[in-house]
Image (tube, rainbow, N blue to C red; front, side, top):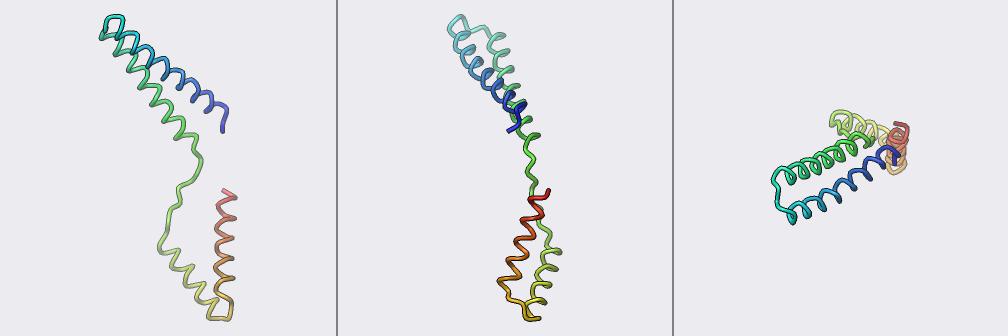
Length: 105
């Protein structure tokens, strides 16, 4: 995990804990609407920062499935099998090629 993201998560966790404590203390101390609103907005801002940082730091690509390309690959597999290749071996080769391509990106 990225050290900057780790720091952001720790800071947000501290803000969450302090926000909960602040809401409890302010409600006991006199239920001042301005203080409660400020604490609530600060805590919600920390949640937005945490969500944004986690989303930006996530570098996994979303797999997009292309039906036309899949159909072409399936046709090529069929042609190789018709030419005498073992289907299991060809499918294993295609699977390994896909995994190699994913690990390279």
